[in-house]
Image (cartoon, rainbow, N blue to C red):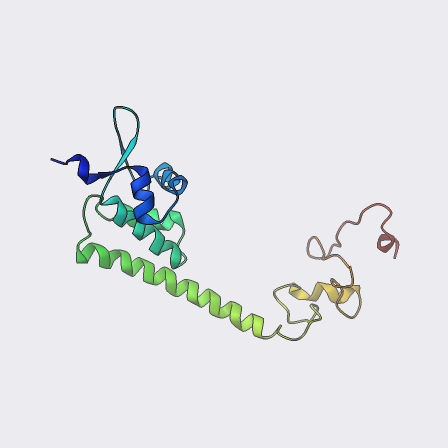
Length: 169
């Protein structure tokens, strides 16, 4: 049997977790945490909810979405700490996700190192701002910085406002 001391108000949960009450209501709306209602309609959270909120915050800190945190929470018990086996299963999934995120960041880092210091934003190899060197078709120099508009789609030019002098060029 649980006593009223085993339950936290939303204000108490907010104070203990460091989150705003609005964030806790949002987490509840998403089904990440659950409350019971008093006869007066006030939320009461089990103390174990603190662990779930800490878990959600840890997931966000390592770059996981709330959906991913929810999927992991669905595999863990709501009312107690997870067993070592339960936690290890979640940790394996998180590790794969984090490894993929690190690989994506490493690829971005490699692409960025080719852009550092160039300043022209129209190098043939620039795959970040000017894929396929579309700016080169508009002339030499930093075309976008000089006011040219990036192409809307491959092989087309951006629409110009009526009366734009550049449209007649």
